Image (cartoon, rainbow, N blue to C red; front, side, top):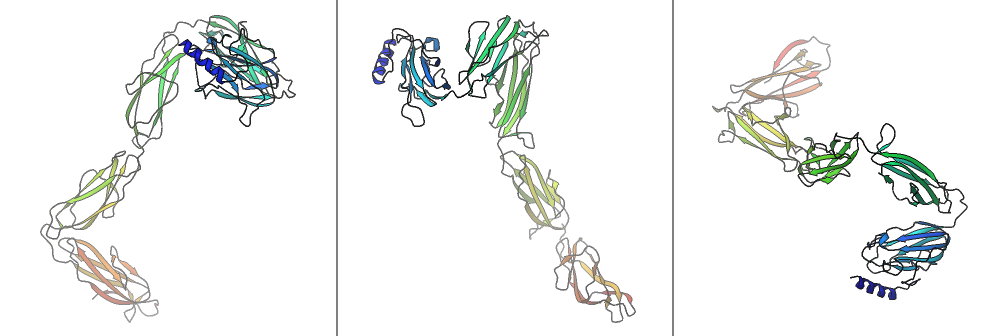
Length: 522
């Protein structure tokens, strides 16, 4: 396999012009004050490390692709500077091929002079096309102020301020001039190294971390130092405390619409929390790193637990919840009337109205009905109507998502069980003060009454050319002039009486002697 890779490398050497020989007798040591280093490994998608800033001037380019930088397969890579794409500097001819067995132990160097601007680099080997990046070169400017750099130590501490089990050192650098080019740290006088992430120190004992930063104009900050002690944590037999909270938009039944978000939190006052895990619906235990979003409709159970640095594991907790799809469709609701009917389709003695509602989304939450324009009432059992006469039952339903159906209606008529074909009797009369010509002065009051063995459903009146109007109490008429009034009644079987009709006049004067009279309608 290594021979095959070496053969491929040889072909690539012929296809790709080299700035330095692919095989060198010894690494070339940097000769310029500024050194920019790229490293590569087994990946064909990205360089392992690469600079982002530099200063104009003589520069040593170092490209290392060795076992030390993560290359375990003798993979070949190049570091090639783009010399054709608009928008980038094209004055540095860099095309270095490196691999662990290239005779230079995978480390190649080249001296160039960089100018202010931006350079683009990439790997020229086919199949490595995503290994690409860019860095910016500043002109050095007039920045003579070094960066400001600080360090902070964090971690669980005992009452003496010593760190239990481990300490984490975070270094922060700022530069208001040319910007920070690099940050370095040194642990316990072992030599400065590039700082790329917080430094975790777990060895028991006293420690010292030195740190410094360099800006893009080459100014180096004074070295800072922070000291601390790491001690063994005390014996811990108490497991962590772990809780979970479910959040999201809910419907009236407490179901989560479309998705639910479960947040798990764990604390441990002794050795500290080491791991948090969760298990969804009986699946595998999974490390918890961020809130768990569940968007599959249905009932769900999420178990959770935590372990501390002493190995204590908390009891399992449980969070139960249901996810439903967002529902914008109202329920389907129908009604049916049942009972004994006569030849005309009227219900004899009583009618029963049954309302049925269905909802395939969030489910039916409530059903209501309204009898003859009355108040809306919760529907729980069929509605029995035994009052003789015509009736209307309106109905509607609401689902758990709050969607309300359109109002439906059924109409029907209930008649006495013995049959009734006799219309009611009705009478009507006018009262008020009248003058000598029997004219009503200022106003007249219409009075009406009706009777029927099977019960009176309604009394109505019509004034002049107006519509028939329900009579429920004496009606005061105060408009001056001649008038015609009609009265009729309807019983519970739907029989309508003969209309009564009469005429009268109203005048707006009280000059003549008035008489309190009752004038019956003809």
